[in-house]
Amino acid sequence: MIEELIISGRNNPEIDPHLHIWGWEIPLYLFIGGLVAGILFFSTLYTILGKQDKYVTAVKWLPLSTPVLIGIGLLALLFDLSHVLYFWQLFTNIRWESPMSWGAWTLLVMTPLSALWAVSWFPDIFPKFEFKYEWLKSGLKWVISIRIYLAWSLIVLSVILGIYTGILLSAFNARPFWNTAIMGPLFLTSGLSAGAAATILFSKDHVEKLNFAKIDLGLIAIELFLIIHLFMGHLAGTQVHIDAAKLFLGGPYTTSFWIFVVMLGLIIPAFLEALELKKYKIPSFISAILVIVGGLILRFIVVDAGQASRWLY
Amino acid sequence: MKVKKYMNPYLAGVLLGLVLLMSFFFTGRGLGASGAVKSVVVASVDTIAPKHAESSEYYSKYSEEGESPLKSWLVFQVIGVMVGGFLSGAMSRRLTWKVEHSPKITSQRRLIFAAIGGLLFGFGSQLGRGCTSGAALTGMAVLSLSGFVTMMAIFGTAFAFAYFVRKNWI
Image 1 (cartoon, helix red, strand yellow):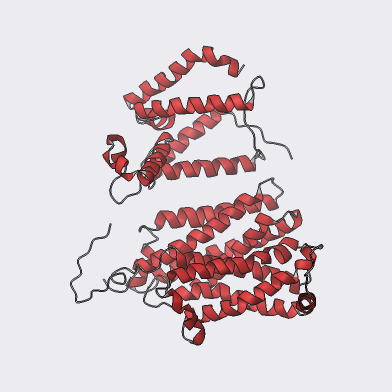
Image 2 (cartoon, each protein chain N blue to C red; image 1 turned 30 degrees about the horizontal axis):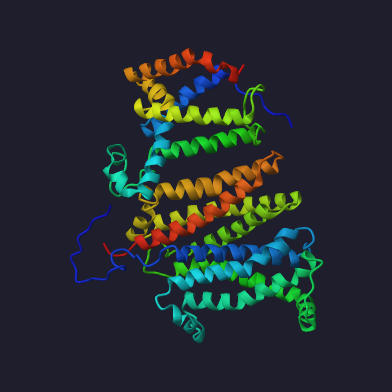
């Protein structure tokens, strides 16, 4: 327990000396944002590459979940607002300097596009399904005809969304732990990894599973590299950044971060996936669940630790 | 793909001893198992019935203010044991859902007896302040008298009572 006596005129409950603003809502929202970005990235990527019939789960099935997931994420975000009923004001402003504004607008564009994207695969995955009304039928035909344009816009948007989940934190200069350019790429990689893991979890096709295990392995390697760089950057920074890094290097977040995120969320699943690629028989859902849960814990720890790190001592 | 054979038990025993040595060397703590279960129980009671945990002489010892009882060396060691066991099984191509039992009894009987045995061992380990790993193995390694007594009591009792339940195995 950290006890301190503040001798100053500052009295700013919930902000000073520790930020206590963000609970479970923001990390959940950031995780879901990353997961949606990952799912849509692979779905659109393989459509653009013309492999939509090879990786059916990733391309056609998983996007069905994205409008729902975005909905849950936005609900979590709404819970976090102090004035829930004023949420629409986000959409009466465009503020280029605000990551919140970027996220709100990206999601506003993405939600309908992801729904159209999911619907465009209906005839493929539900062959017996047919819309009742003519205008819906012709609408579906039109959506299918513009699918490739949808794919290109969604792949760009999904990368923006994935990076945005990290930038939302790193743009917040007042908290030294978040204030690093690594956050964007780290959260993007983690989101893509969660998307690949989701495919492994739900796919019934062995070839698809192995392909995504390979992808996930690469993403985990990148993520580990980024995590090492995150700490290198902080440790080479000013004293506040060094103190922020020390929250994880002997401080209160050490065990939870290195055991649950790095070991159980990255290294162990990577090892299992590597064994699987070497034709060992391993239930693939285990590594997939470890990756997804590890990604969720990562968001929680980073959001929490960022609020605990500070400039003033 | 052939399943790998189990390791020679004598060799495995020596290796286990070396694990214990390394544990002392790196962490300054011995190995244990029942302590981790106890931490989980204390944490659960603490969450569900905090008043009871506070007033009980047994629980209150382990749930200090501000520190989660789960933040203990043994809890993390047991997580490591599970992960390591899983990896070892995976690498020996031995991962399947199964209940190991004598061919003469059913899985159900095996599970029921395992549960009864586990319950008794849980009580025993708390009365004796430690189980085979924490009290006997680790205790004997540091030449604690209670370690030797625990070891003799556990294996002596098992030897004495084996006759009555032998039908479950042979």
